[in-house]
Length: 490
Ligand code: MN
Image (cartoon, rainbow, N blue to C red; front, top):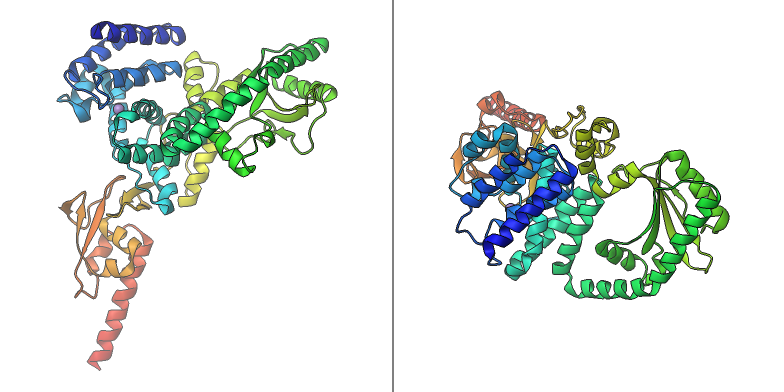
């Protein structure tokens, strides 16, 4: 029974891969699956399921996102180094450097934990991106987390809350910045359920009621739009309805006194056409037949959102006097809106879109980088080097401190407080005593040991400190001491 179910799920995975990447060498996928089955033998999830169902579900999500084979293989193997007797070296031997580096990236990301420190959330998000190094790692981590959320019921309440808050505070905002609305919605919905169960049920009920009430109108409106487009001889690819994602509906309701009738885009109509001029033509025709609401026409084609989202939005009165939002976009805009950055890997493999040109979200990441450094570098295609000159490290309390690359414990100490720098007597990196000139790495946890009787820093520190802040503070206090000594000698 058990073996049959596993085999069935694996066959579904192969089928999904074949659908989007027909040329994939399925033998490699089979080998990766066998490797994972073998490595996780005897392990169980908290839900009582055999462990292997978790990496398999992760791989399935990635395949459904139409991602390429190496990403799926890494999805199958992602928990091997941390949870089994097999190592990263074993993976490298069998599946190559690229897969191994993806798996390594996921293991590293696992060390980032949200501890509820709101002041540092933005830095924690940056740390997440910086430590991933490769955007594909983030995609795998999303798929991994999505399955963890789906089996969250098996965990104790405190863990449920920690994981769900981490998703709402870190994962979902990053998915949003990468333009991955579909993933953002899925992550938020699952986390929402655990963090705000009452509100979740309330929203769920509203959605059911509204859907029932509006379904008939929806069909009529879709038909009406199709008719007026046909009349004007406009060819369209699709006209469909979409229901707003639960968590964003919840947030919108809070803004509008919990009045569902003021949320005009609860159900929106989407018109998908072949190119940009047709988008504008469709908007004109719709306005001719359905009166638009004042101040609700938005041109995200001429001015895309920071994460690259583009479409035309307008809110109109239907012939029956209802108010509905219409979103008009091309096929490419539609896929990008659903899959964000993930859409680019799909297109890239088919060779029809060059990722660097289309990745408007890069601008958004670059803006982040500008906040921490003036030295702006161009992105390579797959690697995230927006933060390549920076590292993100933890204080013992879980605060995240952002420093230039190769900063040392002394730089860290002066960054936290001048006195801590001056009185620094030693340092623990990840709970191990380390020399004061050790270059720090992203994700390290640093604890400074201080000597209260110490008044002055060591002159030799100037030879290795990296930041101007530390250099400046050390020089200043040493100059003071020299002055004081001269004065005392007189
Ligand atoms: Mn996992």
